[in-house]
Image (cartoon, one colour):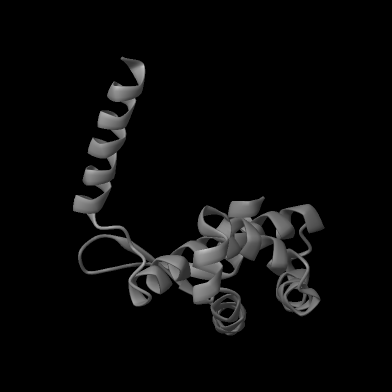
Length: 135
């Protein structure tokens, strides 16, 4: 049912390269615009420093309590008469996808994305530390 709901919110168009691209309806595009604004406001630099790996979960928690977002979503999906749990499931998946992509953009913007070399160095140091403590 969730896939059926998604297919009602846009259409798949075949691209010249043979791949299909989902083209959202105008109403869904408007919803995404408002969702991106809300998520952008929730993801500040302080979230990354204070909450570290809980950024996505905390953002989802705040979005789940956003009554305006839910009202906008239900007004968009009500015409298809799907049960509310199906609509909420699709909303959660869309919000998670939006948050994760925004999070990546913000990490790059704030220069918080770990460098591969620094991660390797941390692992190397961690290994040496473990080796010393087991002797």
